[in-house]
Amino acid sequence: MNAMLARLAGWKSGFLYALLQVRRASAALALRDHQAFTSIITGSPHGFTDPTRLTGWTCNFLYAHLAFVVVVGCIRALEAVGTPLELSPATETIRFVLRMIITYGIMLLLPAWTLRANHNARQLGASGMKFAPEWAAGWYFLPPGLFWKPYQVMKEVWQASVDPTDWREQRGSPLVGWWWALWLIASWGGLLGLAIATLVLEASDAQTVEIAIGIANLLLHIPLTLLLLTIILKIHGMQMRHHDTAPDPTPADASATGEGLPNSTRSQR
Image 1 (cartoon, rainbow, N blue to C red):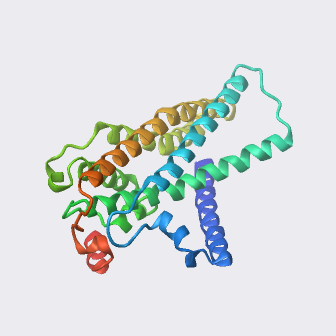
Image 2 (tube, rainbow, N blue to C red):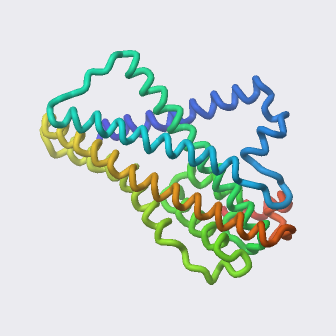
Image 3 (cartoon, one colour):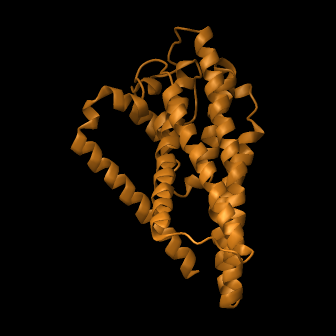
């Protein structure tokens, strides 16, 4: 249990530290004054915003995560069979830095992409969507909603991307359900299993279980990442096709254009 709490505390402090550093770097470079930079994340407040560049960045980080998982999985497998791969301190440092860059990059890019996809769905004609764009991104970080709200957000964006004018009648994709189920298992199932093993097993046995959980967690991240890539690319493709056939869409509601934000915010609370 102590190990689980320590890991949770480490994740929280690490994420807050990353956000602080991004904020400091942004202030130092005056990035908010550069329209090209801000448009990558927020897009245009009015009208459909081409998501191609943001989608590309998000997918590239996910591909990097997939490659990293495969490499680390091979190293863990060698350790499990008794033939550990000796890595120099410099290599370990590089691996740690890459892991941090990829992890926090995805933690920032995925919510930004979700915000953009929600915004664009509204611009394509999806009226009455439950989640405002800002909340579509924010629910990735706000407990306890982070356990189910991102799934609902992504499902709604998928439905609105299939047919923006009649999105309520569209069925959500099973890909979204599988993605979120794997995310819950990979993110929290391992911690729960480790906590139980620590409580009921001897130290040596608990360590063996921890190694097994670590390998299983890495294996889960492969289909998890592939599913998320598929969802992002499919939503991107559907929205771009709708935009190409309707070059001058009308915003669905005021919350999509930045007007009436307090009302949309209150509706989520």
